[in-house]
Length: 53
View 1 (cartoon, rainbow, N blue to C red):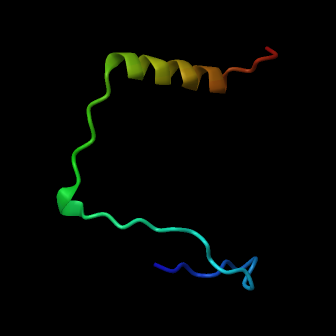
View 2 (cartoon, helix red, strand yellow; view 1 turned 120 degrees about the vertical axis):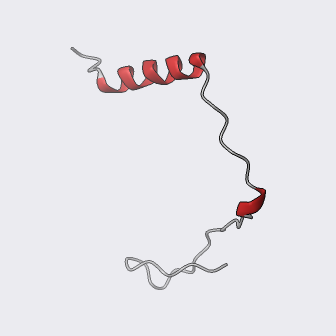
């Protein structure tokens, strides 16, 4: 699959690879565990907290 040239670099060839998947074979997303949810909450809090404050 080819991609369009970017406006900023029209002379550059597209080198991105596009994977195509069959939707009918896709599996549903696994539900999030409590441990993973806690880890994500901790990461979000660390990202929004000023390290100098």
